[in-house]
Length: 120
Image (cartoon, rainbow, N blue to C red; front, top):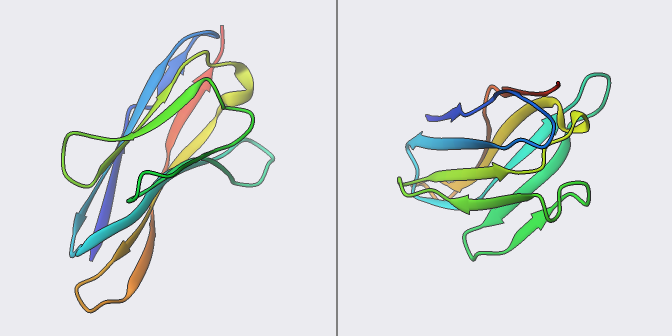
């Protein structure tokens, strides 16, 4: 079993910053990639940012230059630093982890989501 624990969501004013964190725990041999997706009201879930074990990153065009993704200090943790937030960033943010289990198989796991609201 693998569990994801997300933290850091909340309400922030336009132009403000938030930092999301996600920690994976359980039966994990290694991490292939970690990332964040979001679902805004009335829209489909979309990629925000991903980070592979090799250090490759991918960002949604809408967040480039404002958001940064990095591995946290704790093991199996990924952080999303969000700067210059605007109301269009309001969404439920989901952590996603692609990992390898001890039996050699890969597993894709989703977090429960954390709400980010940007409003004055």
